[in-house]
Length: 449
RNA sequence: GCCCCGUUCGUCUAUCGGUCAGGACACCGGCCUUUCACGCCGGCAAGGCGGGUUCGAUUCCCGCACGGGGUACCA
View 1 (cartoon, rainbow, N blue to C red):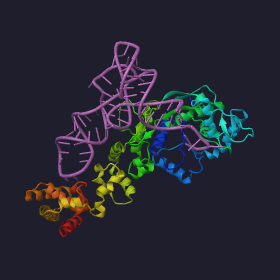
View 2 (view 1 turned 30 degrees about the vertical axis):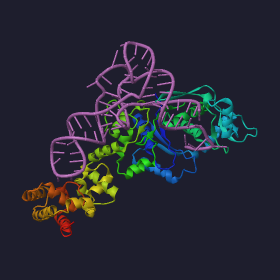
View 3 (view 1 turned 90 degrees about the horizontal axis):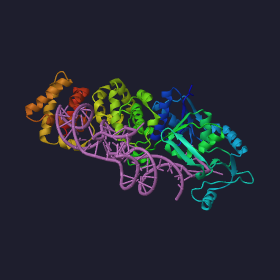
View 4 (view 1 turned 180 degrees about the horizontal axis):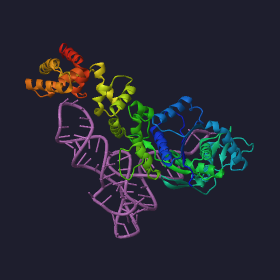
């Protein structure tokens, strides 16, 4: 029987969860759910400066919001320092590692003497003090990677890495291997930025007398300009995406496709389908750009799959307002994100917005104002005040005045909404109701221009 | 500098030696239409360069160029 698949997501809590981290988390989650295995969450918090409880909570919060759940943890890496020390002492005792006071300058000097391609080889310090470096043999170190195939690193090019500080606290490349080994991790799925450091970790596994896990290094994500993803690229973190009005399901779908493609090129894939179809071996090897345009489109599709009740619920939570059902019903097909709703339909609740250009274009000429007056009279008389009858009444105004329907509709629209773009006009009037509609028209009529 | 990875339409991708190089977003045009959208139809658009291997290379190999990552007593 094959061993249970155990994967892990191990963010360092240095701030928000970035889109790249979210994708690594998602891929791990997909593998865990698909295999019936377990996802372990570990917080790489050995950098005391940056690892605050707030930062940790921010990451957990982002994962929960994305509905990426974990089976074990969160495990704090610092809390495992006792075990790190134990392994460290063992390596020291066995001569697999040594303490040295050699500095970066010494490493540089070594290369000057032995050549740039020669990995640093040091000697133990006489007093037994200093940082701990791992012994590196000259042979090949091959990283078996599901995404990229085998990558061979030659030990002779590798500097003997510092695996613990002079105070004997563990450093990343050491701690990560010990922790993954102890947690029984079978697949390490993480960003490509870790690929070059993997041979060091392989050495730690070897020292532990353990088989290394399978690796899967994911291509890095870039911004729309091809540069490294950063604040300048708009919404780059999960919390920013959330604030921008995206749905977790849409984000999951979108980032799953950033670096992975199925045989059939379906674009809209439910999370359940992703769980069954995802395949690490099909992850691409080249970096992908995060392009918000496609996410926007995709989010619109997900928004429109929600029931009116669900959408209303989402929007009320997003805007912090209540009683939005009627406005939501007439706006659903016009928005791509939750954030699009209020600019489009907020006028229904808070009155017309200011848009001098629209007012200039549709409410300044005598013809338009006359049309508006005609519309006002028609709306006052229409009975009942519903979409179908408003429709008929306003078209009649245009016909009577022998102008295009648009020349009646747009002035009315700008009068009630303030802008030239809105949900359907008749629908908007219907939601507003007769009294409120007439009041808005009157406000313009009594104060034109 | 050294080590490692990568390179198909503007973007995300399909293709695992023979394809009209397919799909999606974006863009352009059309239909629908009261605005904005949605929806539908159509269009534009790609294998970095140079060598090999092969009857035949986007696909395999080498070189170059370009991009990225690593090279911390960070993670």
